[in-house]
Length: 315
Image (spheres, rainbow, N blue to C red):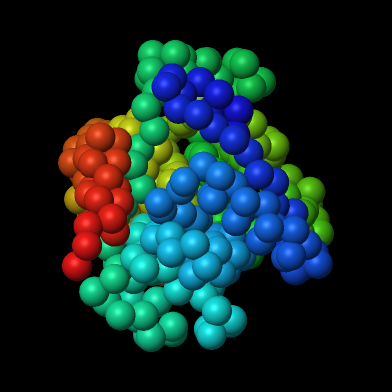
């Protein structure tokens, strides 16, 4: 939210929503606050990014005749009768679009698939060296970014890393993300090989600059931003053959896809890239080209603006 303060010429007002199930205890207040704001500010469109705000927005939209747009970022289930009732929906991948159509019976004509845009950043700014992290400069760094969880398949990443380390000792695994699962925490603690766990921070991007390859072997993933960031830094990427990863990564061309349940396969791909850095560089460059082509910042918001205009155009 603090980044919104830096947007010139944009008036930003924050209306807080609580998190989790307690949202429903404050439903009446949320509804009143949003309705009053929309009426007083003469709002024409409400654009939501999560189901509960959308639920509130739908009620307000019906009462004030406001058009609604929802962006769907993940695979969700349940609450079918009250979910995704916006006039139009943006999804982050074809995999998510298909999920909405099959699971929630959403009209395909109201869905627009738009890959997330890559953020603008100065790549030269992220020039930290490995010594800043206490890592020897000759070490090869394997980077995992994201929630350290079973759905992201960190358990099999650890199993694969043990295989890698037997064959390639000049390597370290860097995990950056929130770690709340006790079983995974125990697995990490019991590893007797080099590994670092870092808490998420605002400038996570600098970690890409010190990495040799990026790994995200997710079991389920709608469209990970980590994949886009890896491409922005021209890093070779290995991902789980699932969801938005399988949709975006062309195996052997701009990255590698692996079966999430086969740590041996993941280990083999890691070892191959460590032993063939020129091929890894080619994968990274190809991913960079695809990210620039399909995840352009300006193109994304031009398309969003078109959807806004279509909502306001009388049929």
